[in-house]
Image (cartoon, rainbow, N blue to C red):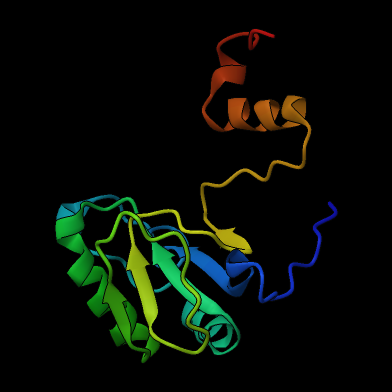
Length: 146
């Protein structure tokens, strides 16, 4: 699969950032369990630190806002890096390379997103729909309408 290299560019704020999903990507996904966050995935904190030294990094999650201070604490505790929660739904970008880790529920611009539930779309909606259909079990219940 061909993926273009997205080098940091002064005229492209999104090119400065990498977005990392929390549950199932940085942390082991244990199901909800009252909001408790799982332990870090093997290698996740080393990857986070390496990326944060070279790009602006944000952690995104679908968790309710009231749980985000705990996400900040988790990221800081396991990574050793400063992190903070920004409740601004208008934030479009995060550009602080080497700075604190942004924790957000907002999908801000990024060169790349790392997410355990993502499906890569390479321009072919037929292939993408087939992958999504398989992931959600539609391929087992009958044909997907065209």
